[in-house]
Length: 419
Image (cartoon, rainbow, N blue to C red; front, side):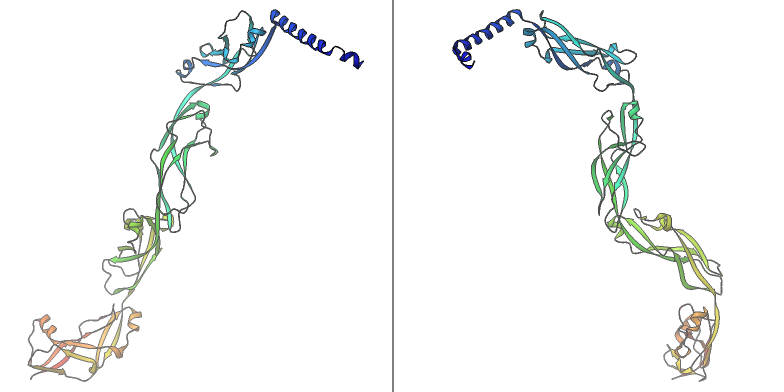
């Protein structure tokens, strides 16, 4: 059998080749009908017929991608490609159910093309009213400034963005915002940031269907230095006769943390309220509530305004008491004696004085340390008197603690003679 197959092998190969050639010639002479398929994107026409009427048009997913089948002779199809097929949908012909008829055309005219058919006759579109809104831009702050600093005001170069698009999408926009990072900042942060649109769940919306008047905005976060300052309170007015301030003024809070520009805050050492409490005619503790903000320089704010913007001030007042003290005659000094005269105490006895003031201060007086001074020249000048030979009663001055005064005028008798 194998021998029969190999007999006259060359002639047999030549015969096969001739058969193939004759078959190809037959094919070309007969040119049989065949068909090809092409994936085509439908082109929408007259879009402005809807957009000019305030409508937003969107092709339903995938409906503008069609499969076109072209039937014709093999020779005609050989030179045919998808670029020779034009599929259009005229939006002026849209139906009530939002279908747009597809029209097919070819760029080639060939009698050997029998048909051009698509697997879909319509493009489906979604049509909505176009909505436009003006949305305020918020600033979202990420992280916190460096130690000793706080966040001040945040601002944007433009405070609104205008958005437009399909009504269902635009109505879902609840606010616009930028996100600025102030992590460890010790000076103002200024940067251009993208604007995001958010829904009611604070999720960022897809803006592919929305037109925005701007997509980013210059944003500034002010960074302020902080400092803890003591409050120093003063009083105004005069107490009722016979009463004195104890010297204790209570202020709550006594220390307030403020914030401001470094150039301003570095010069502050305290918050001074000179006229915090009016003590006019008071015979008991006087109180007042002061608004600390009224005593701060421009540009300085209170960090915790809710707790520290108002200070309660108490000025403690007590009724004066009286005590009697004795000054040893040896501790009484006569000074400023006019020239040509000599003076001395008539008696060597202790001099009794009466002092008034707060009980605590009176109790602190050491009687042995009291010193009296008889200033002759001052007495003569104050009373417009002349010196008298013999005996004179001249006031004595005693150095007493602050807040303690002599009860009335105390005098000592001195002997005067010429030198």
